[in-house]
Length: 581
Ligand SMILES: Cc1cc2nc3c(=O)[nH]c(=O)nc-3n(C[C@H](O)[C@H](O)[C@H](O)COP(=O)(O)OP(=O)(O)OC[C@H]3O[C@@H](n4cnc5c(N)ncnc54)[C@H](O)[C@@H]3O)c2cc1C
Ligand SMILES: *[C@@H]1O[C@H](CO)[C@@H](O)[C@H](O)[C@H]1NC(C)=O
Ligand SMILES: *[C@@H]1O[C@H](CO)[C@@H](O)[C@H](O)[C@H]1NC(C)=O
Ligand SMILES: *[C@@H]1O[C@H](CO)[C@@H](O)[C@H](O)[C@H]1NC(C)=O
Ligand SMILES: *[C@@H]1O[C@H](CO)[C@@H](O)[C@H](O)[C@H]1NC(C)=O
Image 1 (tube, rainbow, N blue to C red):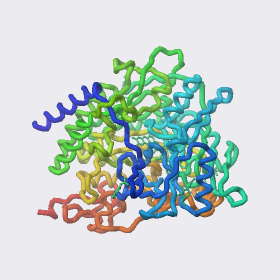
Image 2 (cartoon, rainbow, N blue to C red):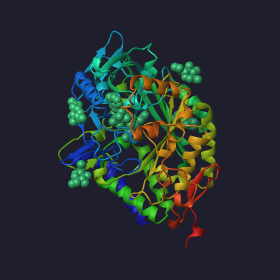
Image 3 (tube, helix red, strand yellow):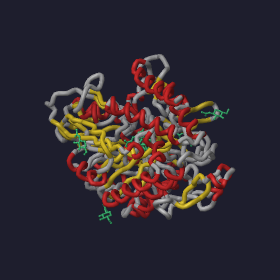
Image 4 (cartoon, helix red, strand yellow):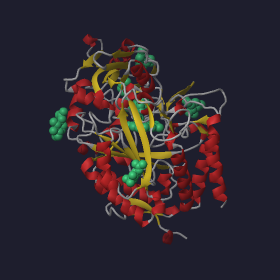
């Protein structure tokens, strides 16, 4: 009962939180007299080790970018690019493994964001790679054009988006991945001394190099400009249907075919599916709605902290039902406010109709709204609020329904084990089309994201840890899902090269453009080649390895390496009461 009071309190704070003020995320590069540290948005990399950087440059023009690459080529420096956001979770942007490595340089595109050229006649836009998604969209919409797809989160740059294959949701036209709407890329690559040590190559639509450059993990060179194709401006009409999850497997394909921008949020413990009916409507349709997705709004810092502390206390008390109460309160709140859709200033009823630019992506927690410091993105590392893993598995469409059935089997054994994921967004199911990009999807695919609690300490096992490990292994190994390059724990990348029929073409393009491997680091190689690290004690807890011995779990805390329940081949760390006293 005491817990119930806390939830009401949390919900109350959520409701009043609109009246307080916000702080934007901190800069991902933090420097002092001893050097700089590169962070991702959560402030913690997969291995929890800092990325130290001693050389850092901020070019402002394409020529300055070229000179930075020339300097690196001449001095044989390892090079990585970081953006002003650094919203990618794996350590892809870290140039070096050692603290004081003078043989590496980080190029920031934070100050390279001045040009956005809209070519209205050809319905295309070319932007500097440091331009943010929001600036790009606003500029395009001013010219009565629309970018048809984008990730749901606007805290990303033109360069960052395409490097990692970021996407929204659509099986129509070229589909939900933004790189499949790219028609040109300018890439700065190392060159010989006679070519000035670095050159800019302008990759055109017919050039096979475009298939390598469209999704490159930043490993081919520095992207300086990207050209996207556009369509005449349009509006979207969105309705969320909070309903039973009984028929997801029958409805999933139909849903994607019927609704251009449809998705499904699935809350397994609540037996609830939320179908997003999301369709293009003419610009003349009435409505000036905004999609201000709840998860990307600023939250009162107090709320994020109290959610975190209740999660922690449920973890410590092994109180699964406490998590269920929290999940259920949150789901009720999301239904009440339509996940953050607003007809005007608030939600007054479905459908919500608004311009594509206001409906396709959001991220209001990115912006400060006043000098008072009360709110932030709920995961901002400075506030010690939410801290979670983000797993994203991309399934060949033909395998998705079997995966869903397996998850339902596991759910039906003990639905409350799934409450932890339902505190976040459950399973978010989205759609992307087959792509020619060598590191993209070779067939029509279904993307599933799920977020779940991460402990403050790497050696602390988590409640229902075995369930999440089993689902992770089921997705990536039983059903051959590919990992989203910008998310996931290390495990998801194991053996990744096998999953891309054109992987060798990517590697060949890299050899051609960057023969000295300047744009590779141990970190990006680990991800691209799916390398497994040394299996130390406790390595499975944070997804650094798959356990094969108890010591990879936490036998001292009662977690042993055991088989999966529905997917017998999975090896997971499971709490076993009988073995501890
Ligand atoms: C809250 C949140 C929500 C998200 N939602 C979605 C979503 O809905 N859909 C989705 O697909 N993804 C989503 N993501 C992931 C996000 O889209 C990707 O992480 C994206 O790549 C981040 O872009 P960035 O500009 O921050 O790039 P960074 O993280 O800074 O960089 C990404 C990679 O690209 C390289 N790079 C960047 N710019 C260049 C350049 N100019 N030249 C060469 N290399 C470069 C970097 O070295 C790094 O390897 C989300 C992430 C967060 C934190
Ligand atoms: C600043 O310096 C201290 C050592 O004096 C170091 O431990 C810390 O990590 C540094 N912080 C940054 C952001 O570089
Ligand atoms: C050139 O590289 C050196 C490190 O070797 C670095 O200190 C310097 O800032 C770089 N200059 C430019 C313009 O990139
Ligand atoms: C919501 O979905 C259910 C199940 O598909 C369906 O029966 C119902 O008609 C839908 N409601 C609306 C408002 O579309
Ligand atoms: C990628 O691989 C597939 C499957 O082998 C092949 O059909 C396709 O032509 C390849 N694409 C490119 C652009 O080479």
